[in-house]
Amino acid sequence: MLRNLIFRTMEMLMVACLAAMVTMVFTNAALRKLSDYGLTLFGGGITVSEELSRILFVWLTFVGAVVVAGQWGHLGVETLVGKLRGRARIAAMFTSDILVLVCCAVLFIGTWRQAPIHADNIAPVTGMPMIWVYGAGFITSIGIGLIVVGRVFRVLTGRITDQELRQFAGEVDDPNGLPKGHVE
Image (cartoon, rainbow, N blue to C red; front, top):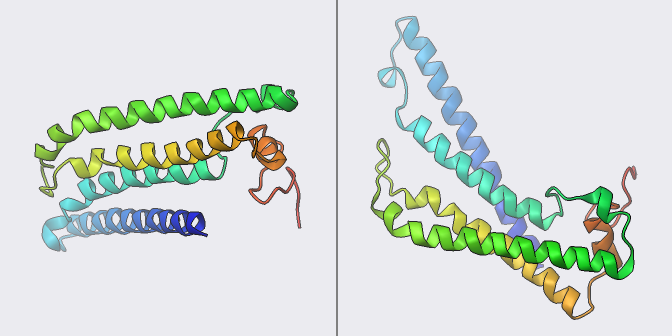
């Protein structure tokens, strides 16, 4: 229940980022085109729209990475893992998850070390501290890390389900366990 609420909120954040990006870029392009014909509004464009759309794109990408991780959507070596059975598949999942945790730790530590620098750097147009851009690494590393820690815990305690193993191997597209190519 809480997991679904968190992922739903992240998906809504992604929609809001995308809608704001499209609106800003389209409006800016329209204003610039109108200024070519002699109708100059807002000085021919909105200066903050380019910078804000780049910042929103970073957040869209990093939050999207967490959402996709929760849906088993990231790239994997499904051809190899699909040939494994039983404990070999569990070992592959465990190894993969440990490597992902290492990457999450590297991302978090790197973001942590860079945070004081970016807290003092100011974006040239909006005047926002750049930690608002680079801080997205915290959300991604913690979000994906928590997802993977939960899966590692289920593997270590023997609670990993057959459906999760099938999803890991790419045999199931749907989080509800429907086989690949299943159409209702």
